[in-house]
Image (cartoon, rainbow, N blue to C red; front, top):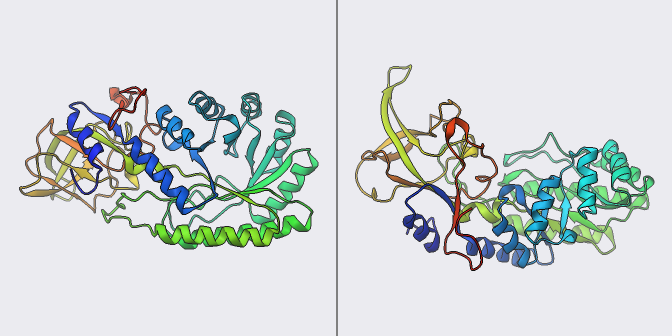
Length: 398
């Protein structure tokens, strides 16, 4: 066992001889319980795109969580996994008429929006639905800012909610998203201030929403940045800012106001790890004439490590705890130049004695490994998954 991985997860990784993604379901449940204690009274809607695995959805649903779904396909999967329709909302502001109609047919009655055109479509294909308007944020301080494709300025949000009321929809809430893997409390503070101003403007127009959706952005704890430096998010400060901001929004609103949050990677990233293996450790000269080591793994950008252009995943090499190390570029197995850490200036120290076939553990890879993957690019199949300690009644492999 290492200090970076739980004992059950380490045992499961050590026991398997084939490549696979291993989840610590109990660890995911503990992270959920901790979140509920830190943000009492805030309803959790798991952003299932981070880990669209039935066993995870079922376990979180049993603890009271709902789901933030982004398509009718995700809605249907969540329902099959046992999430009640009343705890599922359609959190994607981008949706076709057919998407809206299909989700409504499946029982979804709460939808995100950010434009008058989307409101008009909702009025036709989900009549009477509850809508919450996404207020845009700058995304500063996040690894992935998410500041362009979604959301509208606070003033436009007021207009969108007025259009929703006129169209016979229920203007039920507001939402924000401060960016994925948000590393600052200040981003949450700024977003909550924008929400306060928007609540005041809505109140002047006689619109009283019943909830605020705080979106995603809560960080995972086990990542390293592009240069290999451990990321150390100020999670205690973030929780304090959210609690204080929620209290202030309730004061501004002057009426009952519920809160929802949509964690994804925060719940699952640190409780999943990939058991991969070494394809080859090589040494060759680059265009500058200098020798360079390359460590090729059996998994990479297209089958489990999609976010390797923004992060360095932590690697453990069982059986190579001692001995010299060499600085290497880490890359996946495919015949594609993008399948590599795109930051060669920050090389990863790896054991010089690595041989083809040696096991490698890729830690904190439980988020997006099952969703950001191809169906077999270059013939490299998606990773199967297993559990650290098989949950009773659950499948051993997916």
